[in-house]
Length: 86
Image 1 (cartoon, rainbow, N blue to C red):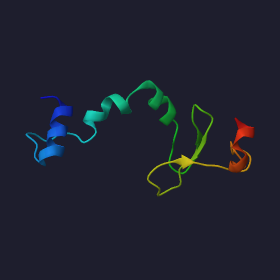
Image 2 (cartoon, helix red, strand yellow):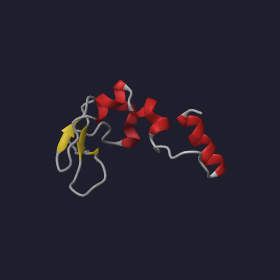
Image 3 (cartoon, rainbow, N blue to C red):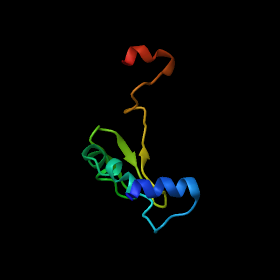
């Protein structure tokens, strides 16, 4: 039985034949090259730019980094006029 099959069985029945890593079935999603490139360089307590040019801020004590939007880097300053920015 593969990890994905065991995880599906666990979700259906609430029981598992063996202990599985909760992220193991999602290895193909979490380890693809685009995700790796996008997620690199983030350090708690620092701002960092990803491969798309988006600034992410990871405050000390927070669980993860979030996009940091300022008036200088906002993509669409007025959502009611979004067609101007496409």
